[in-house]
Image (tube, rainbow, N blue to C red):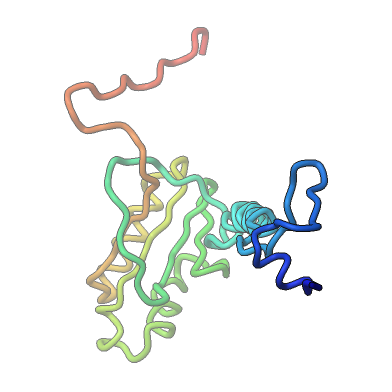
Amino acid sequence: MALSANDAFAAGGRGRRRRRGGRGRRGALSEINVTPLVDVMLVLLIVFMISAPLLTAGVPVELPKTEAGSLQDQAEPLTVSIRANGQIFVKEDEVPFAGLAPRLHAMAGAPGSGTTKPIYVRADGKAPYAIVAQVMAALSTTGFTSINLITDTGGPSSGASAAKPPEEPAGQ
């Protein structure tokens, strides 16, 4: 009686079939190999971690830190940035103080209709308070009603255990 190869396997390995090294014939691999998937995901994670800081606003300023939470992202806002040396930027273009309000009105659309569009003021923590106050006052007197001051989160708490102000260096 001759057995075909399929009959020998169907009989449970009885008959002429020998086992090599204690292993039987392997069936089809039904598991997913996740090692390449994990490798690709780690590479993508590293790429996004490196490129995410580059996607922020174009004018580099050091924002002051507060305990306030962040706002939900909205449509493309009008952004006014103030550097530590007092330079004023609308989006990424430098603008003189006298041209600030006309430039924002031109970007917001027709005067009166675009004044409800929010404006975000990003001032460096070392920028003179007078310049920041003048910019915000100029925006409010020219008809803009929604002016927001942008800060970083994670600053000192406003509770009873507030941090002490920095001490003056000795001899100055």
